[in-house]
Every structure is written in structure tokens, then in C-alpha cells.
Length: 314
Image 1: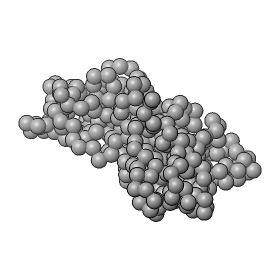
Image 2: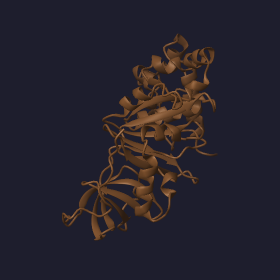
Image 3: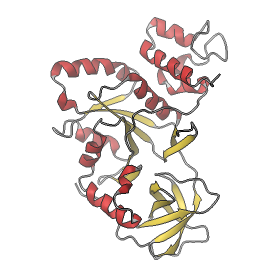
Image 4: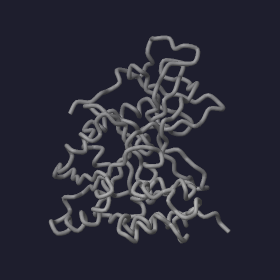
């Protein structure tokens, strides 16, 4: 599998205009960002004061300060932003301008519906396509795989694409690679689901690419601990994000959160009360749909748990 590599670490000889030349943030760490120019060169940039903090995937304008360094003069409007709360509960962008979120789960560690639904809701709320990848399928015998597929069947029924993959047997890898073409995708998931192995399989020259980025940063191989964007050989971009123990949503009002559960859509606005939270209110159309079997009770339960978790303290 061929790879696309920048031709050099020097900026293009073209002189940027007063505002700057277009670029894309491949990774952000500390006070600096790695910016890829339109010609594929990688420049270590700092961000001009009073500009927002850049994240992986940002489109920016930058100017050169020397052959290897530059200054980001403008952060362009983001079409989508994956956000999670920091340790203080404040929204913290993880990556920007992706159009597909690939949620990686595995049989070991066993996935839990709650985290999967939180990722899916996050994808729906920022208008990106979710894709569920069940990795390490080689660890499953026929009976175990059948049970897992049965557990996940509710997601197929509401229209989500599921892929079963194994980097050891290469099962499903062609389908995954095809699903990433023409998209800017971010891989997310719990630590231990084999996300790093998937990235290595999709990018066979990953060590070389990380080494090239490390030369520009001057910080060794620390770039592997932050979200980093790579180009796939046959088209498409892949953002590799560090694994997490858990994923939580930032504060979202119940009215908006309901739109993160796509199968709720036909009944949103049909409740007796216009401000129905779909938790315990009488005349709730979504609760009625769940009782009829039109909405899976597990999904409604997870939605309600999310609503309760976002209640203001006190």
C-alpha cells in the first residue's frame, strides 16, 4: 500500500498573502501545531494571540517566520467539531472537520451500550456519519459471534453500518478501508479495543510517518499521544485519537439530545407537552413508541440515563 508523504519540511516558496496561506492542522500539542501546507509541506506553527486553540483537522491560514516555522493567523470556520468535557467539565474540542466517526468496540474488553450510544449521539448531533467497527472478531467462536451480533442487531435495525474486523486474520479490513475512502474519519473508542492495531494495518508505514512528524516537532515520538491526521493512500483522511476509559457528552438539553437518537425522529414533537423530556412525563410519544416496540427499550433507557447525568447539581 503506497503512502503519501510530504516532500519536505520547508514551506512552499510561494509567498503567502497578508492573511496567510491555507493549511491544515495535522496535530496540536502544547503551544504549537503541525500545519500541512497545500503542497504537502509540514511546518511547526504557533497560534497568534486571541485566536481559538487549534485542534487536529482545523483549516487555518498561516505565514512563514523561518524555513521550518510559522504563525497561524486565522482559524477558519469548522464544519464539525467533536467535543468532550475536560476535567473541569468545560467543553474541550478533540478534532474538527471530520464527516465520519468510526466507533471501535470489541468483545474484549466487553463493550457497554451506554458508551456506544454516547458516541453515536455525539456523531448525530454534529451531523457526521457514524460507523460501528467490532474489532478482534478472531477471538470469537461461532456461538460467541452469533450472540454478539444479536446484541448489536438493534443498531443495524435503526440503520447503522456495522463491520467486524480482525487485524490478525484481516477479516473485514478491505471493507473498513473502502468505508474510509473519500471521508475524513476519526477513530474513537475505549482503550484496549485494538484501535492502534487497526491504524497500523491501515497505514503500514505509520512508524515512518510518526518519525517524520517527530522531526518537525523536535519532541521525539510524543505526537502519538495526541489526535493526529494521516492521509490514506487511496483517498480519505484518518484521524487517530488516543483511547479513553470513558466518553461523556458535554451538557446538552434534553430537547436537543433526543435528536442524537435517530430512531426517535418520527415522534419528536408529537408528545402531549412541548417541553417533554421523554423521561417520565405523561403523554410522551417516544415512551409510547418504546412500549409498542418501535423503539428498542435499551436505547430509551440509555437516553434517559444521559438526561439524568446532565442534571445540574443541586
